[in-house]
Image (cartoon, rainbow, N blue to C red; front, side):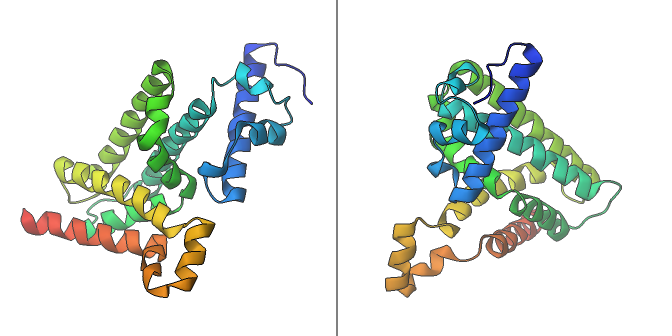
Length: 215
């Protein structure tokens, strides 16, 4: 086991190691619902009680992973549209869909953040998450407005729908073992477990087209 972090820099690095361990476990185990603090500390090489020095609980740890996800989504969108202008609504929707699809853990966390992570974490952790999420959202919106033919209001509506769809579709597209077994027994129910990316892309494209038609 590793020694206790003694400096601010050591503490920051150790916290980052715990985040990386939680992210790797979520990937290996098929979702954040399976991540436990005990498994995270073991993966990071810490004593099982050591995580409490860096995170008050699992909720704070996962909320910081969600915060990281928002930053990654902003960076991915800004990179995709850098230097581009005149993107059609369909092209903007494709950028939003493609960048979200590239961040499966973030899509998974969007559900958990709304359901319980924000409410179960302490108020300062919730404040930090909300501040970072809104800042990232505004950065994404600004980049898309500069690059395309949708207004700021339309982009805001598109991003709202994108977040809701990504959260819901990711969960239905990654059923628990129990549901997966059930869908094998009753294939007609398995339509909810269709591929995540194509469904998100199609629905966002349809919504974007509807925005301009309604206008």
